[in-house]
Image 1 (cartoon, rainbow, N blue to C red):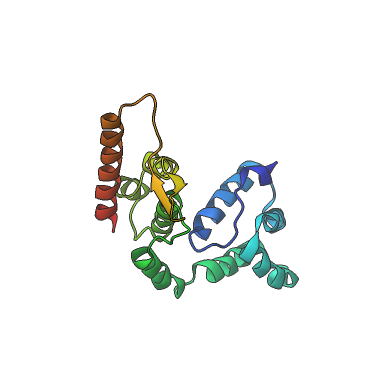
Image 2: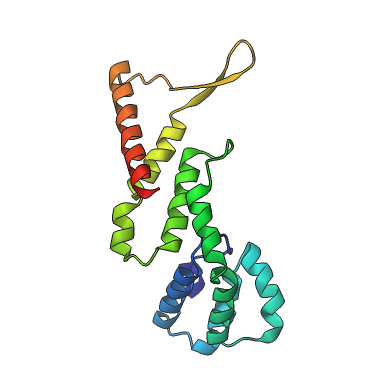
Length: 186
């Protein structure tokens, strides 16, 4: 039951191991599971890189405090922070990455780094859930059409319920909101 409430942790750069451990500890305490079993419960939620890391650590039979220390050392060590900051500030959107994926990745990195801000301050100066959804909507508002030369061209879809002027106004407003928010963050 407790495992279903705790999110998985894969060890991705944008995942926050501190937040993962905090959420896990709160849920494990609330469910009344004895601290001696916490590691046993959590290791089933370690996936990808985190699961591989645990495979090398399993033989040590770590108690909770040592498990926390080792996990944080591996996935949140001091040498990782400058690399994450550099990725946040310098990584551009790739050709295969949608706008929504790009914005979400940047937002997750920013939340993870936090820069010593409170949760309220982070939320006030970064993307809101609405803006992330808007990025996904804008991604979905483009359809790929092949022209005569065989080159793919992205064009807005035909919106039967909106006239052209309203559609252009809505897209312009959404682009302005996202653009101004991106400038204030980066």
